[in-house]
Length: 253
Ligand code: 13P
Image 1 (cartoon, rainbow, N blue to C red):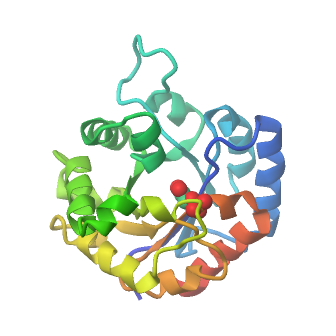
Image 2: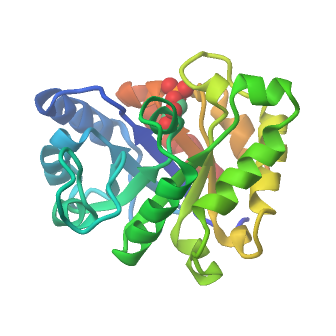
């Protein structure tokens, strides 16, 4: 059994108004297997910012943690439209997804910005879930390993290895996100081994796979030596499917 706990994260992306998020969170909590402090699996729901207060009320005391999908690195300041770590902490948020490929691609987030956010999250006691992954073009060019290693080392620049147990990394091949073309589990585990080998100390980091995960394919990722869980998009919007994913992680823990 791995010393690392399992981790299953539902990234709801820009789906669900606050009212819809309450319905979904209620359905997820009703469908989930019982979780307590002894469970070797952490479960996180990451709704849009506007739904964090309402979903946080439901997840409090539930054994499920609240996550955000992004944050700014500053404490406060003239950054119109941005959200800081103290704002998230006040709502009971414990995890924050950083460097998701959708943020890198559509909002032009750089490795340097991701690194600033990672350091800010850690300094506030939030657990960053840092997403890395190659595009289809990078894979076709044989650049997958170099890409994920570069993203991982850039994201962790200046982070002390002692902190590596306080963060998670997610391998999300960009071409597998939302496409139904999930990465072959053996190949995903090979890339995750590369990510883990990027820096000494990452053997203590929870490593997730993300990209078209479903209840039908999740167990084959969890069987990999390097995979500690999943960062789930589409399937996290289906309460029953997400609960099944959490149950699979608990079974594998
Ligand atoms: P899908 O599970 O919809 O492919 O999305 C994965 C993802 O981007 C999670 O962050």
